[in-house]
Length: 249
Image 1 (cartoon, helix red, strand yellow):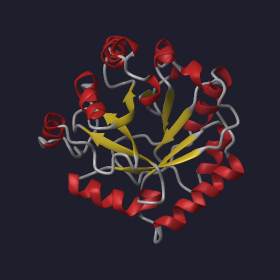
Image 2 (cartoon, helix red, strand yellow):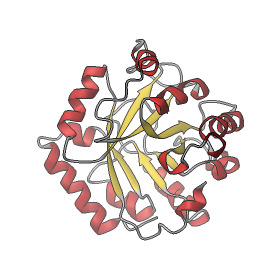
Image 3 (cartoon, one colour):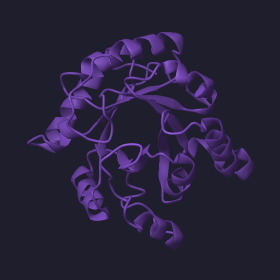
Image 4 (cartoon, one colour):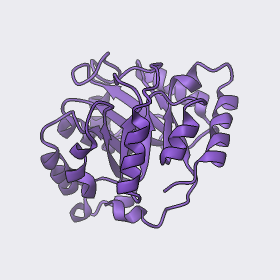
């Protein structure tokens, strides 16, 4: 799948705001604050098992109800939604997010021992044999700071991008940046120069330049935006950094 990105070198890096919703209403409120400021959003969902603490929609029947009633994510059409799926059962949980409007789903490599089956099922359900337009759906694989990137290698033909975690413990915003991610990004970029790299966790105005220069082309930003005094101004600062430091595929 990643061959489609071989012509995308020298494109500008992208900043993606991240939301960990505590409820559907919280998601709607957060999206309202981002209206007109960006076109892509990452929604972090945490099942309380693979990572914690549990976040919406786990513990509720909201996603099932949306799926059953044909309801889309709030703001669908105005925003492109990426779901960072911190779930111990991505095989079960991925499909409903796609049906409610997610166009990118990030699955964590450590979350299941059945990644081969997962990718086979995703291809079968949403691949070309089902007349699904592949450009409308991107599947990425995330890898934790403690995990050897060799875990990703058997699945690189199945993904459109990889996500490196810049923090030690996933599932929570506001954690300190773990600089060990920088050499991991550089090494991966050198070995696989055509695979887009996304970074989530610990991204700030201080850490972003190094991440971009290491080879990241997408930076997911959470607490650095939400804790700022002026969301619009802070987002503009991040975008300015991508213009100076980020020209990667």
